[in-house]
Image (cartoon, rainbow, N blue to C red):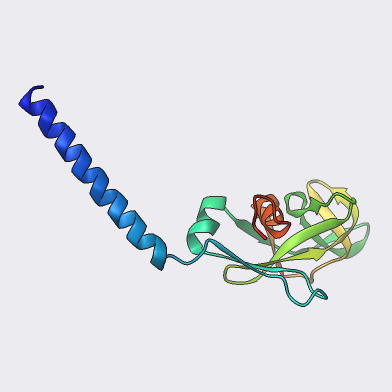
Length: 147
């Protein structure tokens, strides 16, 4: 084995050891990526993501808006904010503050130009998740051992 190859191997092993040592030390101090507060059974779960988890999921939100539909001002959300469960119920995740997310039921009256017109749901101005909702739902339902 040449000296150059030997040096590269030694440096690689040292780098790997330092990298692994740093990672294991950080793990104990790192908060969980997701915490779930299931409440008392009368409320929906409250999911709190770490900043890194929210970034990795690419969480994006949009505000519930009021649009003129059929001659009336109606609350609308992007179609991408809708989730359907196994029973066909329709939901969206709201983002009331920071990295807190809660699943809430919505009633969709119609879909118009990529917007879901709601007859029941969160009030105008409420942030709804448009990207990452399916992943939140999976965690909420315990997919992958989340519960």
